[in-house]
Length: 114
Length: 112
Image (cartoon, rainbow over the protein chains, first blue to last red):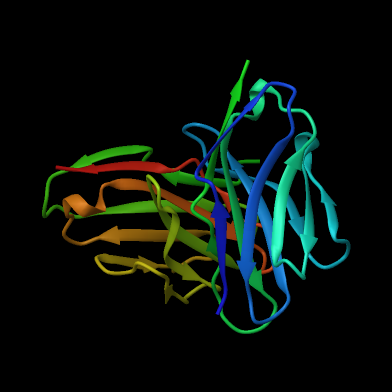
């Protein structure tokens, strides 16, 4: 079985501060992991993906995420928040073997305070 | 490049009415998905398809039917709409299960 948990449904940071959005997964097989961003009234857009090539993954808009197998985590970070980063962020997981579905976390809403 | 296109963008139905949501993709993707998004619940998979002529149930399939007669289209049907089906519906597609999904802009559906 596999699933993904996002800790914190709402996160607020000051403009220029570090952004840290948490994602933990459970999977019986090595996972593929993704972070998506959703701006108001839009669909989801891919931020970055982990596909076992490298544990530190860089994405668009200055975001990056680190795959930590020992902690079953894939947290999303950005060194300096910008007002335009305010959005909903979703972590997602799929597996290399078995299953045929794609699991999304419940999302984290990021607010950036000027 | 249109990507994934959903029609309609908005719709209001009365309880018991039926309707079909259309999803079209121009990327030649094999996999297509229908999700619903509700506050605090993230995205929940309704049905999906792994290729033309195939469909499979997701996490919340009850009350919905789907069809994939053509590779580029994935239809979601509500036979008898209920207020609990008020939601934002998203369609997505991907080349394979392991690759990122491409999403449409959603359909806002209200059922009175």
